[in-house]
Length: 569
Image (cartoon, rainbow, N blue to C red; front, side, top):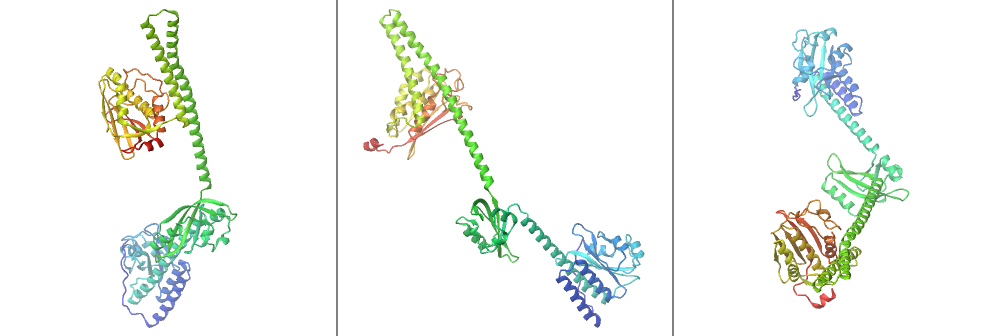
């Protein structure tokens, strides 16, 4: 529907019209001011105009907010049959006087509906009601939008005079005021009802506060949660009911000064009437008046008692599950320990027993006797190493592993181990490259550090590529020294990575299918325990270019180490 500004003619009314018009305008405005029903106000407007224009019968149609149709607003003196016929007119260029006026946004005069081309659909209804002429004016709201039409009917052909046009202009404006006021009042009532339902029926606690943070009004949920009756909270300071955190006032003040509408959200405690404290999540928002200035605060409170209890229960169940899993892992580890140790003990014991029987039953020459004794000694050393490693793991887990921490030169230790493993490297045609600053030293137990590096470097040689390279790179920082052992083999199998430092975990045949897998599966676990006991860290991963990378990080000593400091450490 098009909307055009209201034309304000300069027609002169009759002398008697002015006083009557003024009196009727005051009556209508009084109805508007007192909030009388819109139909009653529109009836008064129509009655006043019909008194001033003899023989006229009037109607007011209102644009339906739900769609582009015109609905009956008031027509106290038109036949009911005709009112029903025109109720729901859709504005258009041939929709009678009212529908066309609403469509074009300008007055439409049909001097005789019997011949007017805009009346084909409603002509019969008008003539049956005794209506021959109709002129209609659009009613505009303050924004210039069409909100209705004001129609004047006569029982014979009629062309409105300047006086009649002037009167209709005045009463059309009054109708506009009444309709707009009714809409504003309706919006206000709807908004108030929406607020009331949202506030009163909100399952969360809600309260209105003045700018001094005193309670003005609370809903039923807040009263139930706090144990106070609404009347008991009126005027009470917020701080006597809600245990605010120190920066709450500062946050609220900053929002008031900044004239924003953000929420101050915090977890606090609600002090109930019986003295108990409830954990609550609160939001405090600033409500502003029509001029944009702060007018009051709104407080929302959600009880966290059940959710915190549920979270605590969930955490307890999770901790219990973790403890159960750890206990199960420990039980499995013990079973694996017994199985592995039994297997590893049986072989050297059989060798000791066999060669002992051989020495006792056969008269061996000196060389064969020496060989038998060497085999017995080797098996005994193997058993001793096994028992020592298992004992070290037990001590490490208990936190009582004996250590003698001192300043240990990394270069010296690494090259000593490389020399020890030279034969093993030669057997697999592996080249060992060492990159170490000779001056670098770490805080460590010399024997334990040698034990850790010997295990890792030996594994790099054993499971790396035959004919490949093993690189040992030492990188110092101000407080730490990082030792990296890098091979160029197939790398660590993905499924083995998460458990490589657990006892008896071996990626058998995965890294080097052709390499024999020996040992009893506690080397890396022991290395992890030893490094941790020396305030260090150990990790393993696969390099992007392939191969495994094991990293040992230990505390670095100063460039010049004082012997008394070392002894004290």
